[in-house]
Length: 274
Image 1 (cartoon, helix red, strand yellow):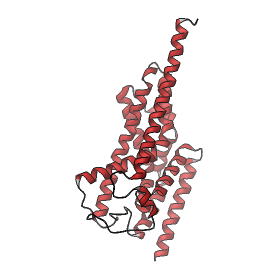
Image 2 (cartoon, helix red, strand yellow):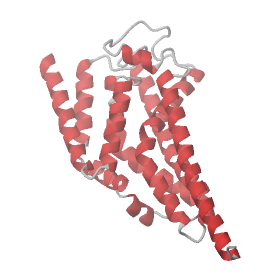
Image 3 (tube, one colour):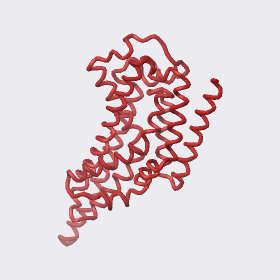
Image 4 (tube, helix red, strand yellow):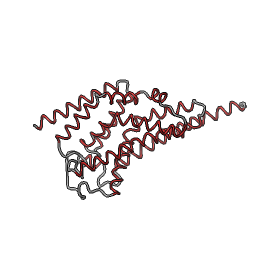
């Protein structure tokens, strides 16, 4: 028969493994729900599947007046952006959250790993909610100005799309991009330098990490206006690029290659239109 201390130690290990499984499972369920919500375009006039099938169309007649958003429709658009960001960004931030929870398990309060990890995730998602509010406002303004299609949710002017491609590509070479990307690529450094105790501290840490992530990726997210906000090819492609930048050994190089490709693409479009 095991001594009491050994039995307690065994229970602790079981509990810690269970906490990790619950955290991984919660993120997996969140990712799945966000993905399904995005694919089926809940509440929108067309699903992402429909939008993707009609990706070659720049515009089509809309059932509503461009820029005439009701309060309910505004909420749906903000929610569409936010859920889409969750689906796109969660795979690349999951390692940071799991590392944070693992460090808590080795601290003096291992029983709080699950709650602290959940708060970190909540703070991260809060940062992207702020981005989604700004993106929805931008979409409304561009639609009201007749620049973005009310039906297809994409830029109507190919030249403006080319400019966005060039701007997003150029941003890949800026010091701001490098600074934010370095924080995203070095989770251990971030967690050691930005550590704050308690549940509120975990929330603030997640918010800060989300802001760094936003600073790193906002240019790429703007490309959704070029390819179509609900175009699944662009959503998956941009999510994959973000993950490669953050999680692979050559992420910085990949970032620059992508930037050069975007600039070249934009210039080729402008050249072809002149």
